[in-house]
Amino acid sequence: MNRYNSSLIIVDIFNSAVYKNANMALLGTSGAGKTFTMQLMALRMRRKGIPIFIIAPLKGHQFHRACANVDGEFIQVSPASPHCINVMEIRQVDRTVNELLDGPGIQLSELAEKIQRLHIFFSLLIPDMNHEERQLLDEALIHTYNKKGITHDNASLADPQKPERYREMPVLGDLYEILKKSAATKRLANILNRLVNGSASTFNQQTNVSLDNKYTVLDISSLTGDLLTVGMFVALDVRFVSY
Image (cartoon, rainbow, N blue to C red; front, top):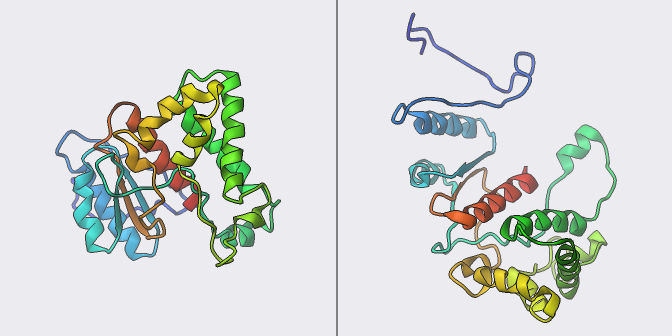
């Protein structure tokens, strides 16, 4: 509502004839209603069939009620949460729309793409890794996936029992078992142990939440320190692959 003449303000952020992109920034003082406004916009977009993906770094609980009211998926990323998104999971992606728009593309190795993103994850978790450790980590990651039957051939991702689905993916614990066997990677294993056997071992599980819901909220507000970086990566990785 225009405060000066009481007229309606109707903005279509997806109108490419008016705007170069659909990016927005909501600015205001505490209590001005930024979160409320954003949720109203998200709910209205959802009613129009637009997929909604919210990452909540602060006060994530404020998004829970609206998410529940539209049968959305509220995922709390936290060491104390029962929810888990397996950071090592290679997720199936429907590329039908992209192929219709851009035509068939080059078939890239999904394993190689995943390992590239995992290198970012581990550089955030272990920022002082040297070049030798990065190379050894790369070899360990490939070995971890190979043990599950996954190679650079995308056909190897299919579950032999249910070919329409991907096979079971490794978890951080599988990588940890390989890293701890070598003296050269023992330091990496010791740091990773916190996410495998330590206080943040909830990250060492298969994904147990739905990532296909059209209204998804990832609450990372309870994470602190280096775990906040880990949680943000997990959230952005889901967003990068899913949409």
